Length: 246
Length: 251
Image 1 (spheres, rainbow over the protein chains, first blue to last red):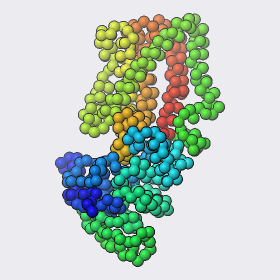
Image 2: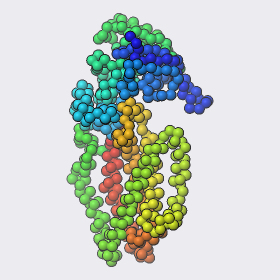
Image 3: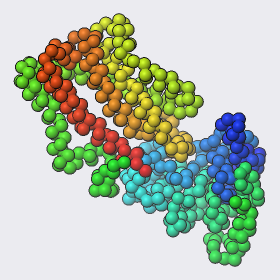
Image 4: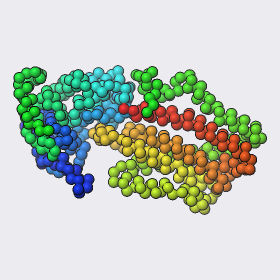
């Protein structure tokens, strides 16, 4: 099957002035298939968030080529942020409907689409509340609901669970998996947690410390639902730990 | 930042609407601040033996000049701030605006009088320059607080045009716009009376203050009245707005 996302020789250099030239990611080439759950892992500072912003079009300044096939445009992208990035002056419902408003969707349709996401993520009670009145878990649910409301074909997630307590993160990982299996988007995610990557991903790209290059791409064919206490899980976890250099 | 009791008492209600005026005590205080300036004016006209009606008319003319100048300055100041708050444009433009701001505005007054004559336009033109800088710099510093991931979320949602301003840029600038307005209007009141006196414009508080300038008590009471009015307007309009926008800005 032809890949949905093709990256060729992606390099990002931060050069605010000539003396401070910082290579963030270097020569990244890989393919991501349609419907795949693809995760980048690596030590902090390896440029994985930068890479995600490049692929999603948020950062247009880079070297190399990105091809997105299937006639997809940036309007088909959703993004889940590490710190939720909800606009504090909008209600939860208004935040979730942001992309629908921007697409000039008729009000009744936008309302229906927003209500659907509110229901799925258990946010109906909070629809008129503002983000600061919500717990972290509820805020990230709203963040995920906002990313999904426009029915995106590709969803980018930048460490989406790292600001949450581990209990909430466990529940939200299950919810993300359910959404992925039901709506079948392509998900490209970044994390620094190996067990999290193993629980979710089809394939895991391990990045080296700065400048971030691809150390290895691991196929994770563990059967779903995955048991994080199984021997096979631990074997893969060990393999990944040995690959990642701090 | 002061946390409003409102958020604690009504955790599941929206902060929109007139929630800040909900308690009886607040209503009483509001009525007090509404009533005090007219009562003072009436009392003052009795004591100073000035006819209340022309005084009130003078006052309304001045207030109208200030209001028009404020609206123009706020819109212009906000647009300038939205255009120049970041990026390469900001590094070039902000120092220029900083120099412009420090230019003594009163030096422009003779030129304005020469162009427009002793008219409403001169006063309003001049007031705009008094009000626009606090608004501009306050909105710029507020917009610079916009978090990068908010901008990214807005970019991913593909918000643009009017919706971008209405849902993102305007609310993101609101606390700054309000603080800038409070400072700008303070400067505006000060400049208003002075300008009216210097330009010799017919009607307005400037004329009033000038004709009683030798009468210290009346002048003092007039200034006191102005202070009461500014304080009332701040208490009634600006501070609740500021509190409201701060609650909405809270994360």
